[in-house]
Length: 387
Image 1 (tube, one colour):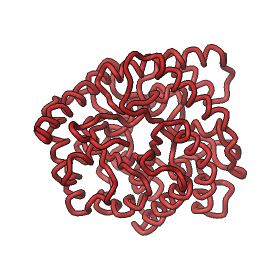
Image 2 (cartoon, one colour):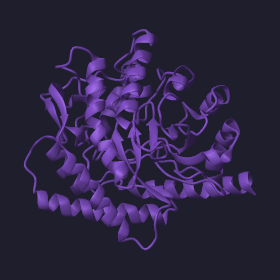
Image 3 (tube, helix red, strand yellow):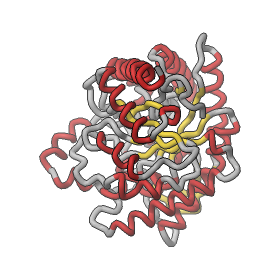
Image 4 (tube, helix red, strand yellow):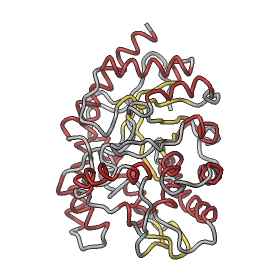
């Protein structure tokens, strides 16, 4: 991954709005209902080309395929791994349970979901990666769509789920322990991770589990239990990416991509040193939403490891407010001061804009406005930081 040598580079967290028809079709596939595969492939290709062009128009330097081919950022693995069946009963986030009035209010948004993330299939057998053809096709389709563009990204990336979010949301009904389940998932993901990197893309591992599970799977339990889980996930990730070029891998950590109170979020101070153990070249952190705008202080106290970059979340992916470019610039500059070197800082979004098909919380036309504000804010910060 390039440094921000003369200007702050821009990127985002991965998922971008899908057309309603595509979201509905992906929802049916997620539920194992019949779909017209040829129509799905054509719609996916058209939408992928569209979101690549829109990213380039908005000034995004490091962009992706918007996850247009996937039903969600993690349940897609049910189509690429064996060992899943039935339904999980995922615990609800503790901050939502704490405020039942908000939980009822949120129900209006949940009704739009095409993919049921709370009742995903569970592990009922040995986990094996069977989706090599699928990930190769996604990489090839992305490369083809990139080649059709008149302009190009500084560098393209593709996302993949972490072993931890799958283990937390697609519950274990087979392995003797959660640690063994996580390690089995890590071994399976090794194929997907390597295929993405060997296809010439930066790999982003999406790991909201490294923060969000404190107030979900581990709500009310000792912090040590959660940190043991974090360490197990980091170990599984490091094993899965061993031998791959470190500078082609980045890690995304967040506290859940939902607009809510987030009063039970684990402080970054309590997890950051554990996350730093990941053998990756960049860390994308949520730092734009009202609950985590202060987290640059953690980066002042816990210095970013040598050779690691920060992708600062400078755009909130859960609100339809369009950030002023000056606000974006301020967020970038605070992070750069905390790190001590603006060349090690990029600007991004807190999370994706359509992490589950049809469940975007931001109107599509405002997504592009937010990405333009990100680019404009990065330009302002660049002038101030680099002259």
